[in-house]
Image (cartoon, rainbow, N blue to C red; front, side, top):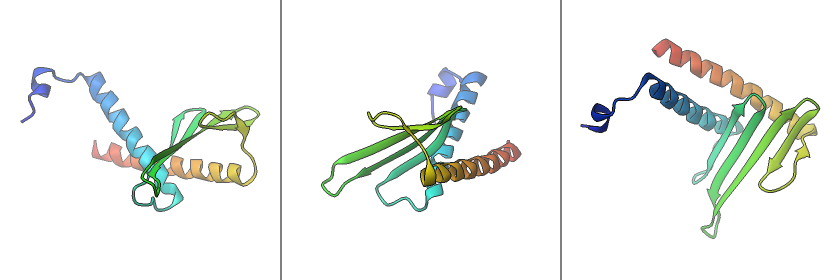
Length: 123
């Protein structure tokens, strides 16, 4: 039996915050699966952070056992989409990468919309 919830009950606001975080974690995981199977030992996430920001994050262990992680941030601006990776400067996204990002964002939106509808029906 868990004692803490009985001693310190969660407020409605805390429950909503917890639910939001859970949905965001599920959405990030779902987004990472849009790009095909995730190799064993890898973690991949793709999600919309806010109205103007998309994030791609991947972690894995290389053949020498070293932990690797790459985070790519896409910032939607009026004059285009800029991306940054690690400490590198922003670069304009164009060509095939831009088309792929657009398709991924549309798929993410559609799948997340379906998932949220499922959650509403179960609530």
